Structure formats: C-alpha cells, structure tokens
Image (cartoon, rainbow, N blue to C red; front, side, top):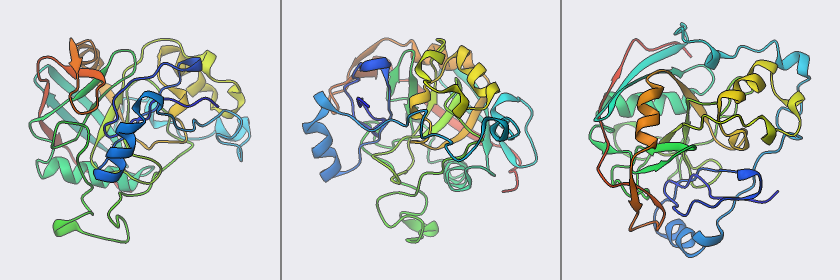
Length: 279
C-alpha cells in the first residue's frame, strides 16, 4: 500500500497520498531525525490494511467486544483526565486496561507536570493535534522508563516502549494515541484525532471492524492508523476545543519544514488526573 507521512514525533511534511492515508510518527534524536529530515519529501510508512487488521477475529466475535470509546461513562478500569489548555478544556478517559503501558506513561508524566506549558506544536486540520514534546519542536520527549526514578530498561531500553494494539480501540474521532518514530518507539508525544469527515470509504473490508466502530467512522477518524499506533484514550468532552486548536493559523515549522506550527502558541497549562482505574 502506498505510504504516507508518519506521525513522527516530529516529522513534518504532510503528504497527501492515495486514499488520503495519514500516519503519525515521532521523529527522535540524531540518527532518526537526520534520516527522517533527509527523506521528508517522500516520507512513507506501511499502513494497516483491512485484510490484516483483526484477522484472527470473526465479525461476530468483534461485535461482542467491549468498545469503551463509544461511551462517555468512566469505568472502573479507566481514568478521567482534564487537559487544560490556553484554548479551553478537554476532558478524556484513559484506558488503563487495554493500553496499560501507554496509560501509565501518560498519567505519570501528567501527575509529575511533564506536560505543563508544552505547546500543541503540530496541528493539522481534519487530521489531528499533537503535543507532548518538551522541546516543542517535534523531535524530543521520552517515556517515564527512559531515565530518572522510573527507569526500566526492560520496558524502554532507550528507543521507547512497545506498541499496544487492541481490537477494543480504534482511531475514531477523539481518539488519543501515541506518536512514535516507528513500531515500538513510544516516548511522551501524543496526538488527538480530529477529523470529522465520513471516512468509511477508506475501509476496504468492514468485516474486519466491529459494526459500531465502522459506524463511528461516519463521524471522522483515520482508520489507516489502526494496528500501527497505540490508542490509549478518548475525548469525552471538549471536542469543540480540539477543533478550535486544529483550525489555528499555522506557519512552517523551522525544524521539520511542515506547515503545521501554530502562529500563536497554544499550550497545555496542566493535566489533572482523577482517580486512577485498575488495569
């Protein structure tokens, strides 16, 4: 399948490809940053296809799965977070059960103030908004296990922690996902899916999706990301704020050369973590 711009923790150049396939990558540190920058005009990555996604499940089995993104109720295995930004408040729930590493990483960073005053350094209208880089360039950030008191080389040996792909979670509108520089390179950067256009036509085999998720893609999302990036949360209130951020006037990012950096900085002021759910 033709590949596209990955959600590089930073790679810039948004490429429009066949079927408008969008991917999110995080560009990290020297070698990766150099390689990514040198190939930004032809950046690509393999998208998951409907023929391989959830291949081991029948449609009947998929339809029996818990689909927590479709409910605004915060369950016992979920955590409420309030993301306060300079453009308004976004309320989301984090899926401790289905993405335990990504959830722990995000929640720990949030409680320790790691995300405070960070920019939404990359906003692409009808795609997503991205933050979580302390350098505010798209090239930085690390997981809680990379260094410091939480350091754990078994989880993150230095290149990031593993993807967590669940048949219960998808990149529908409002999904919160980990940006990365390739499979199993998750750090601190995250993005919120903002597309509000019916994208069901991008799904070639709807039997590989739970029926209710296929229906949810009428409201927007990016199904090409399914199976390639970790979904760990869902916005339950404040999508109007997400839309406002995504609609900000942008300029060219001097580091990535992508026209996606807000002309006026939009910041996360703080993230408030509620009672944490069980895994």
